[in-house]
Amino acid sequence: MTGRALACLALVLLAPGAAFAAQTWGIPHEKPVVLRGEVVDLLCELAGECTPDCGGGRRQLGLVTAEGRLYPAVKGEVFFAGATLDLLPYCGREVMVDGLVIENPAMTLLFVQKLRGSSREKWKPARAFIEDWRRRNGPAREWWRADPLVREVIARDGVFGIPGLEPEE
Amino acid sequence: MHGFLVGVLGLALAVAWPGPVRAAERVRVTGEIVDTWCAITGIMYGFGTAHHQCAVWCAVGGIPVSIMDDAGNYYMVLRLEGDDRSVAEPRIVSIQTHRVTVDGTLVERDGVKYLLVDEVADDRGIVNLTHEEYGIQPFGE
Image (cartoon, rainbow over all chains, first blue to last red; front, side, top):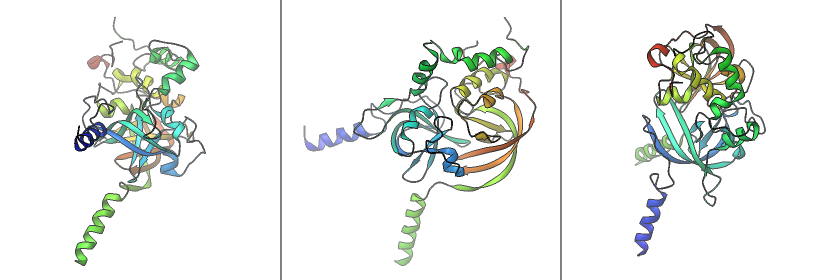
């Protein structure tokens, strides 16, 4: 294989559509991306209300790219869960994110599918939520139905959110 | 030549400049508390009673909540009445799908309206009854 062919192969492997790149979901305005940026606490970045640890998992996080563009990270790889615990270890540091940017005119969102601290590291899936959840609650097939807070709220208000309003049999 | 250089410099600055950032402003917003992910992506019907259970799941899962006003604007909530917790915050979970009026500070940046809520001025509870048309979203149970 010639040097030029090897270079072309390398470009293909590094392209956004390559094997490691994001899985598309067919969401309107979605765009597979590999973003590199600094992990920030949104409340700190936008309002100057900062903590030393990006909120320690209590606050929403985002990514600021070298161009200064801010992306709020709203979703990770776990069903019905965000990406805060995936990004938290990189608070104030650079991270690479493989995922989808949803550039809906109403709001731009970042869906984190995989991440790594540098190009020397392996990509890891954004599944920190479920690892943390299992440590706290034990195994469950569907965390979203087994979670204690979910069970409390649904038991109190019902699936429609209005006490006494029940689904038809 | 000078004009050309100025033009090139201007273009370079425009490309390198951070996205639009609008100064913070005081606002009053009225609308439905929604799960940001499902509402914005449209991967399922994401509003009202039909989607309430899923909205609770997502709020507990740490997905940010937003307020959708009657004009279809979305405001991502980063703080609620002095509590800086916006990940799985129990009060935010408990008011999913409610129609609320809030006073707070709006900060816009890069295509997102962020809202720091100082006060929930009114809470009408859940008024968007969508379950008869859409059932339970998702899974039907």
